[in-house]
Length: 351
Ligand code: MN
Picture: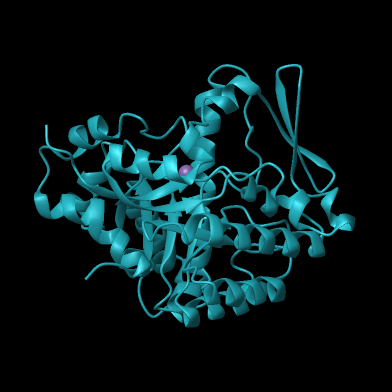
């Protein structure tokens, strides 16, 4: 069977364990992201707190050699039929959980230096994303400019911002302005910035997996309703790994509030919430059977496929099987849009 060649809007690199301990000054290094392995468990410490504790076997299942070795990653991309991919952090995701301003800014900068030289510089096929402090907006804007100067375009953002700094707050406005002016693409990856285990007991694994997607939907509600995307019409955002079919339903829900509760609505927008969403919000999925019908039946076309390499919820090493199931009977125009076109449009690539 012919290989289906695609771009992937979602993948992760596994950073060196000692990246921060090596890069940060000693007064910060002891609170840098750190991993300890004992009694079959892998414990993650960040900024003095235990962030998570997983069975080592679970973590190892998500670490094929290409997760850490970029040359093997490129071979995996060839093998799986992936031309270009957006690359998000793994351990760098923990920076969103830091409280200390200096530690957060220094950790983000160390990640970006590493990602620029070890990922982005290795191949133009790899679209590594920069990380910013979410503790302080001035620090974030400074690092954004530095990262854009280093050639970054994608910016990783957590779906759950720190307490007291919701995304509809004006504390973020200087960052949205700077991103819009610089042509940066904020990519909100689901399952980041907040609690990962909300339910225990029967069904917990599936319930918690579902829960990871909701904060991504909240990001869209906040950035659209508060007028951020309306004020910055050239700002495109991505919600990575959170699926697709919820987008039109969220747009309907927001339009209903905007229209029927109009007397309470602040600020007034220049277009309906759904129109702003359809114009500026991109999403990615791995397996969803509901993704292509969302494009064809509802006309929402900011839809990107993503492998989520190398995670368990992704498609590696069976990417071609998944792609054939998704696209063999699809309209070629829709297939091109979802596998190539929307990705190139978002990241300013291609013709
Ligand atoms: Mn992912």
